[in-house]
Length: 358
Ligand code: AHM
Ligand code: MG
Image (cartoon, helix red, strand yellow):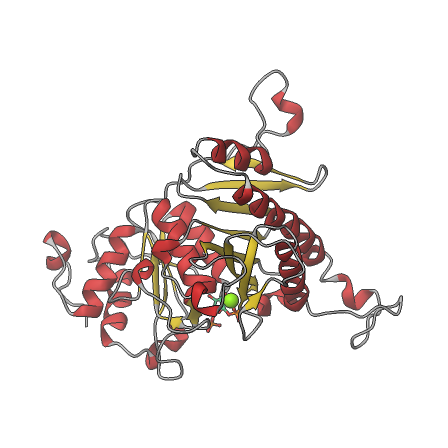
């Protein structure tokens, strides 16, 4: 990441905004109409507004807000619902979308027939990890974009039930120490840091590549006693041992906020695990809103994502809120995780390293 400030860039590098990057990358695609760029820009704008609201979240109590009404007598909405409403409103009015689905809404949301509609479908988690807001930990927005197979007028819920292989673009925004917008439209993964003083996302992470081998593992290990698969417990024991493929125990890092855990692992190399357990046998995380968009980004950056049995992008959802077990991150570790889950031997020296792993 470049740490140069605007003032130190005099006469030097070109500054690329999210907007100009989107437009330029679409220009390289023959026949691109600009519709996709318009949609991404509307998500970018919504995320700046969400970022502003997230930054003010800690002031709610100080400003004397009670219940659902603030000091000006305005209604105060929970941030995740606010983010859902804002994204849904901005995308349905950008003219390029025919339908949406959100983690915060039970049903498919077709764009109203009195608005101009386009051919894109968007699935999003407006504010993932929102239980972390009260403790000031990083949270995020996740989105995936698909093309409707039906015409914009006829699109229904079944159009959105597509596998991740059909994704045309995906991204996430992390509201952390900075706000960063990361996206891919199939030509690498790029990250843009919000400069709040000018209100622009500036290219800060060009063509992100994730390390092949992780040094971090991320999971809610407190749940390990109830994980469905003994193979997953063995995998985590293996990662923690000195006898693993790297010869060093992995570091455990878990925020409990998927975007934040994923972003750190993407940059530094890591494997994030959320398996099925006795409470949620099919896993906790949602395919359309969380797992598939992040799997797309991860693969674009050279990583991998799997349920432990199946490549994540190959799965066709059976319903909007379809949940999946998730192993995502550095490719070699995701592959090892699959081997443990499926009871297959590890290749080469990693197999010898298994001595003593129960
Ligand atoms: P949410 O979509 O309701 O916010 O839940 C998803 C979050 C993820 O951000 C995170 O990875 C996971 O739930 C944490 O779950 P747990 O608290 O069980 O470890
Ligand atoms: Mg979520």
